[in-house]
Amino acid sequence: HFTTNNPVFITTKFSVSLADTVKTVQLPGTDGTNVEAIGKFAVAPVTRATNFPSAGTWYDNLSGSSINLSSAAYNVTLQPGEYHLYSNTALK
Image (cartoon, rainbow, N blue to C red; front, side, top):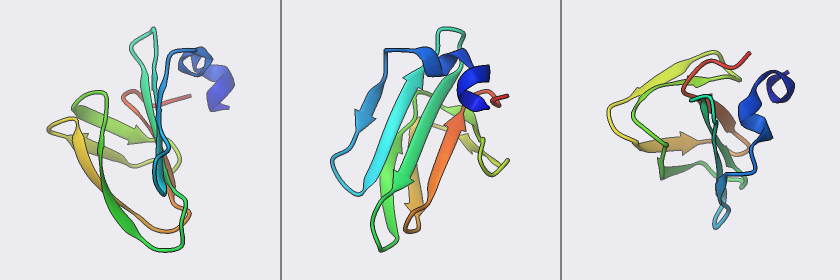
């Protein structure tokens, strides 16, 4: 289970964006692991810009895929109810 096997989920330091139908949560880990959770909570698809903590490879721990970001900025298209749990190191 991600939350019990990865210390990044114990942090009290985090940032959230809950302003519209695309919600994000960033968790900076003390061991170098960072997490970006992003989800779409509406009935229509949408493309939104988000900023990851850094460029590089980010692992989608729910689908098993990954993305390689050349910058921290990322445009993501989400279908209704779609969500991702990205991290800069694969979670256990």
